[in-house]
Length: 272
Image (cartoon, rainbow, N blue to C red):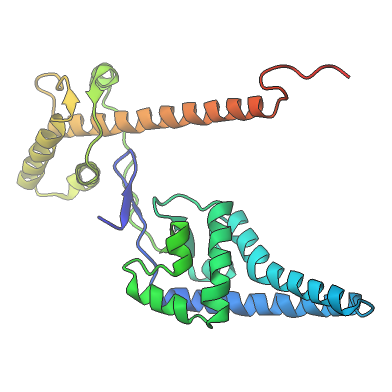
């Protein structure tokens, strides 16, 4: 459970760290790609800067090094949401510790620290840090709050959740507290596997999970509600409420962004 992230529907996102060997192979591919880009850029710069004096030549060389070691890696990871060429080839992605996509800040920190731990020490610091950290993080990942995960191969898709029609009104007005991740995941997996379970085990597990879940719901379901229908109603309502909350937050953020782009705030610009 510690390497999975449970979303509102009770589905666990596979966020297990990538293996050390896979990350090293991906890094090697990235190094080769950057080396090729560096050679091409250096040839172009050498041709264009033959008439420069020593100071200008040194400044141009520093600019090229910074662009190859910092700007290009950070830009690629930002635009691809954590997928460089090597990671794309091996099915890896760099994500935040909460499983979300990385931003510009994360990519820049990783690239800047990578100059020291990957290039200046030939990867020595990164290898030691990755072997010592339980999630295989290098120093740049520790500072940026990121790590590499596998995004290929996946889990069997569970049937979609549907709200039982007879519980729609009850679920809409019920107070549903946040479920523990373990309980939400167990409930979702139970619903997905229920048709394949032995009838006696299905009844026992359904009653057990419904009993645990009922402690987080008030008022309880109507008398005579089947445990599986109750579980499905709670998970479906949680999913719908989280979707509404996320939509409202995105709409509020968009409205705030519009206001922040006006000068002064919320006052129409004078007609020119």
